[in-house]
Amino acid sequence: MNPPKIDRLIRSQRKTVALIIRPDGSLEVRAPLRLPKKEILEWVASKSNWIEKHRQQVLQIQAEKAQAVSRSLQNGDLLYVMGKTYPLRVIKTQTQTLRLEKTRLVMSSDLLPHAKTALQKFLTELLNLTLAVRFSIFTEQIGKQPARVRISKARTRWGSCSSNGTIAINWRLSMAPLEILDYIIVHELVHLKHPNHSRAFWAEVARILPDYKARKQWLKQYAAWLTLERINDQPLPPYHPAVK
Ligand SMILES: [Zn+2]
Image (tube, rainbow, N blue to C red; front, top):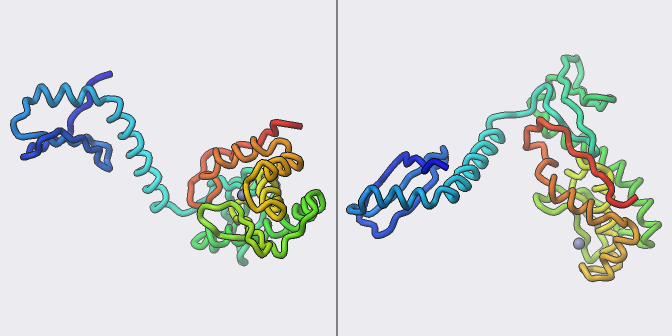
């Protein structure tokens, strides 16, 4: 590997050498006034791996930030609906339209300025219908009824089960494959029996979904894809059951 190029060297009354990766990925080195240049270069060279790793991280964060602020949805962007990938097709119509067709999600151009709000509403309604069906299947298998089911907009939690028996399901699961939504539903329903993550809790989850670990793993791996804040250019990976 070539030694890293120093973009900026700042000498001051300091006693040690410091490396700083700037937001644009450039390398700034701060060094004591009289430390020979050769020593600085050697030291920087010895940190090549660290510098490269951090440079990649900094550049990736900047790229994601830039994408998030500069761009709203547009024709051709990929959207995920219940685990399937649909390109957004923007059309001109007299009336506001948002509908799912076999191979695409059609939206009228006048909805485009509010595309994310409209899509979130659309996906939440779809999830609402789906939840009714899925809960009826699993409440029967588990033998517990939630007092209430609601859809949440939590930033980080996929589901929750409160002590009064209310189960909350995150609206972003409307983008995930059904197997993944089912895992969260089962997880929260089993909490009505075991309000903890004990051995008995996981045994009950495994009784209903023998492949729950793979579902959990999928969700962990693709959590960041399940958002409208991301510009998608790849189809959402399907869930492959580990156990039939
Ligand atoms: Zn839990």
